[in-house]
Length: 410
Length: 164
Image (cartoon, rainbow over all chains, first blue to last red; front, side, top):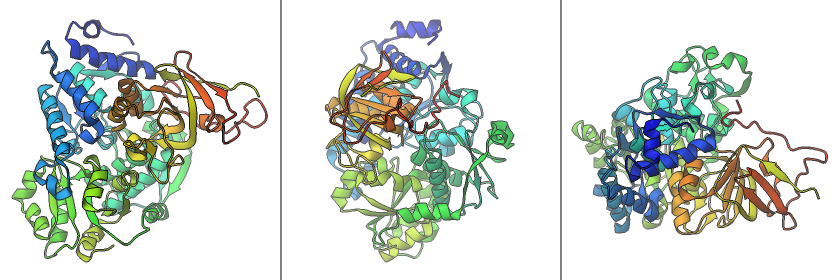
């Protein structure tokens, strides 16, 4: 990679040991992908839960944060993805003290590094959305695909170490979705049906993600009969990223880089797939083996204020037989409290949690501690993830999930 | 049998030799593994139940979320990590994780590597030379496709950097 004088100084250790380690890591990644140089970034977002970090990752953070030369602060606004717990509700989901201890150590290290603990995967709805053409280093796949596709920002999937490195150096290697040539559509898909509910949007995203199949595919979807809301696109993109590792999609006439399909090269692509309600139904049915439900979870991504409002509306006048967890961001939770949404959900027997996400919170250990196996959710992303954690997840609408919490089955 | 040597466009890490676990399937440390036990745990994964520790994984593509970037490092700290991971197409996360976790990684072939490398064969991954070499296929549980004799497995589009 070509380095400018500042980057050479960082690599030589002239700006501290932490900056040297960070840019060294970035160069190894940039070299792998053939990046020619670095691009300055304005924000970084770090996936930071301790189930992923483990002891080794926390120790790695602590070493950085305790650098003897004291030069270990991030240079740009750097925020965090959900952590592995909501400390105030950890007992409700059977989390052990060692998990909380590890979380506290990670938080302490991040704070020393100058990282802002926003603990959210919906920063584009709650903190500061990136704008068209803005180069950023974001670290949750749902955040990246939303920011790239809906906002027109430019980011690769940046894992925790790389996102933190970007925060520490203020730049990232220029490859992948920072480059114009990778933002053109590679796969043209015709939607013959437009989803109506969030779980349907997520399922359609999952179908498109499976068709795309890898990180370097950029689906262009045509035929939607309405402009989706932010929450609908949130579920659509998060599931597409989860099922297909996709980081950028275009919706013809809707998302900013595809005002016309031709703007992203769509006119030169044949329609490779037509997808409709049957395809979405097939994905949903794949997870519909059991009517039994042990727990209802709304999470992944964290709920917006409007989603919590809807869960609250559906909860009114009910008495749940099953645990119902509604998980949101620390930015949304105070408003949910003020507007009475939290009280409505918890009066029915549910629990509103903040700053975590279910699958990032030791989901396997939670299952063992609580005896939970059969899980209902309206998140297509969550059903895709939880199979590997030993759950039998089921995808249903928010209404159906709340009904299940009351009736005890779906 | 003609020695099979495959050339990659992207590679990092140290040269390693070991048994190949091969599947036309994806890989995510979060979605697919029980990292405590060192096995593939997602029931629908084609390598479900098999140990990945000290094996060379030959898979189609990197899947899922960003957690794998931390997880490879965590797996390395407990010596419960693959020797190398080889993909037809890789995402950025696995590369970032391999860089931190010191895991050999290779990606970007002109042919479907999962169809060419026999499952169970002993293979050498040389990042410096950007080559994957089948050293001994006698332990393989499926026959190696022979690119020089007859049908070549269908080439999947590889949309890595520099190829579009």
